[in-house]
Length: 565
Image (cartoon, rainbow, N blue to C red; front, side):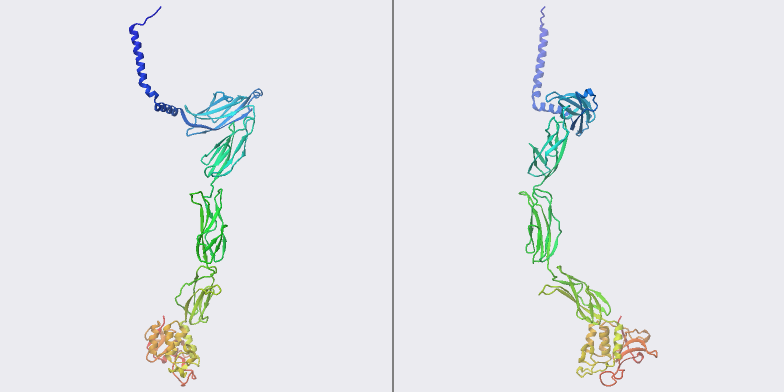
């Protein structure tokens, strides 16, 4: 029986075919566009993968858990691995392939990082892939041969430990067992080293590891350190030094580890300090400071590492001495002061102290000055000096003054010595004069008048006043003495009664007479003064014992009392 299509049916089919053709023409450019195809591929890849990985996969072969019968044909393969990636894998799929060319077949799904397989005695490739939910991550694979001796140890037969940047070293490793001795080498940081055909090349200073991986995932790593060709750091163990002319010192420098650690030594001024190739520094004659530098080598165009210290060269002996004061010092008799001296830097800075007049002031080896007697002495601090050279020194004058007690005692002592008498003469050549014997020596007589006697007691018993020393040397009357004492610091207290007088007061009537109040009493209860009274015998000395004497104060009518406060 033959069926024929009606015209209406044929028309419907023709319209349907035309519609299909039109849609195909509309979408054909989009389907053939590479950008669209790439975007579809990228979208597919993005949605089908996850950042979860299997690393350090390892397979161990054992018979534990097998029956005697199973042991003849099978082995237990225990798999262990580590998880990696930004996500945490939710499961792992284990695949097994027979021999070198067999296809992988999924044999197990686990959630832990280990699995156990029962395999026959033949060669297998085993692969474990990580999954995050439905998305697949990266896999890792090993090969095993149950029944044979699989790798249990890896030996590095050539093992570089330290390599210089730009240089090479050989590396070799093998696995034991009877399956496969070959290993794969991986680098933790390929910016530090590279490995190719058993040759390790140093690329950048640092430390990284090279890992050898056997067929069954067994791993063994070694550490490889790459050091720079030249040092990046240099240090000198000694600090800055001070040397005396002619001295020597050996400097020691160290660098960080490098291929070439040789150093070059240099001085900034060889007239001050010279340095040898082994770091021995010699101080030359010229004083001053030089910089000693130890420099390493460097790549062309790069700055070499270096370290420097200062070497200061000083003379054997000081060139200058400075005292703590150069101003004249005034010290009371029996008292002491401490001086200090500073010498300019030198090898031997010993200072020797001396006094020009030990009867006035003594000085210790440490600069302690003690006032011994009234007068002036020069204290000198002197450094040592080389033969034929002048020593550096500094000096200061010390004036030793007495006390009011010393003044009274001095006057009383002269009064009791009858070699000293009274005279108002002014002709020093006649040996009968009032000029001070202690100022002029044997040129003058031992006689005084009242004013010159008190002046001498102040000048030689108390001391410390250039004004009084000048007056004592030239002498004068009571009025001049009154004015001179006031210039020397004595205060006019007016006319005081005896009850208000103090030992050491000077009782004066500027137009007539002057005495020194002692404050002592005679056997009759009279308070006493000491003074030069009168010439009893008309010649030098005191044959009567009363010309200069200690007598009752009441016989003198003073108008003013001068007191040193």
